[in-house]
Amino acid sequence: MNLFNVYPRYNVTPVKAKDCMVTDDKDIQYLDLYGGHGVISIGHAHPHYLKKLKRQLDAIGFYSNAVQNPLQCELAEKLGQLSEYQKYNLFLCNSGAEANENALKLASFHTHKKRVVAFDNSFHGRTSLAVSVSDNPKINAPINSTNPKTFLPLNRVDLVEQELKKGDVCALIIEGIQGVGGLDEGTTPFFQELEKQCKQYDVVFIVDEVQSGYGRSGKFFAHQYHKVKPDIISIAKGMGNGFPMGGILISPKFEATYGMLGTTFGGNHLACAAGISVLETIEKEKLIENVNAVSDYFIKKAQKIPQVKKIKGKGLMLGLEFDFEVAEIRKQLIYKKHIFTGGAMNKKLLRILPPLTIQKEHIDTFFKALKEILNVYVIPVPRLRE
Ligand SMILES: Cc1ncc(COP(=O)(O)O)c(C=O)c1O
Image (tube, rainbow, N blue to C red; front, side):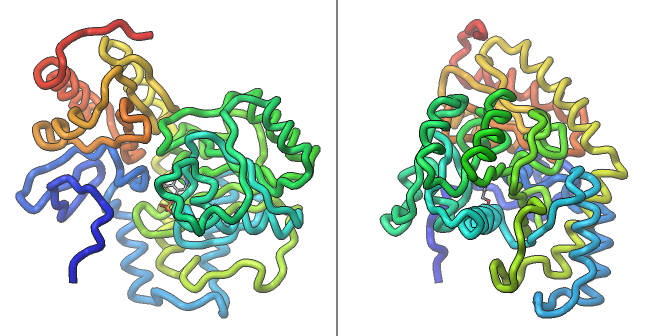
């Protein structure tokens, strides 16, 4: 049987990994500034993570949500404490798309309305509701066009109000910082106005923190820069450090009823062990402080590179924008310099999503490599930054 060929893949085969380094089948070591797409939060093969997962596997790996699972409560308690959302409730699932699917469904149950407002260049996942509010026609099949939605540009409060006041909108969904789209984000006044208007027009305010959450932005959640409290927050990627898991944090104003949401695998014992060890490590190793320190260092170094037109994002969710497409730079970084980086829908943006444990020496390695590539392999024409 062949694999269904949907991924353009680099010709690299990782076989092991430790912290910020990935080793391939030819024993070549790569610096991981991509984190498997923002997934690796506490570093590959972190000893605490391994210990917890192995112990859990020896005890019980899975049982369904038909029985008690105190690990889910332990995870919820720790997550509430670190994110400062102690009063919210947690529903656990298996991926980011599924988290948004449940968030949107809950919004519709709650308001008895159907239409969703989302934003230009958004990405919320591949399942039916999540993909329908993702602004990319190429990944939407005809079957995904059934539920009503409206895309608006970021930072246009007037257009948001025009839509919300029509009275048929159940949810507004926005990424804390746009990931796949290319690291654009709403301003603080915009987020605050969204919160206000959602209250005024009985619309559920959902912030998708699947990528920007779990400390990656330099705060536990990116929306916490804006001092707003969404009704629902969706999470995934960094949550399990590679173990597939997702969830939604739900305001206490939503009433749960049996069967309203559900999943076979969500919140299983192994996932919870992974999730708890991630939170414990973020706290114990003060990883959010590390994010901020390394981020400042990265930005200062990036500002000195004339070919970099714009530096986008926050914390360790960063992008370097050039005035040419970066596909060739990414290729050279992997094959010549052995560094993984990410791309975006914005083809001129190089994305940096390293493990939150990354150190300044790694950033030095990256910039040395980038400068060599820019000078040797790509057009060696320095341009002034905007
Ligand atoms: C902001 C955001 N939401 C949702 C998703 C979908 O997550 P998953 O691939 O786990 O379904 C992603 C994945 O890249 C994302 O970046």
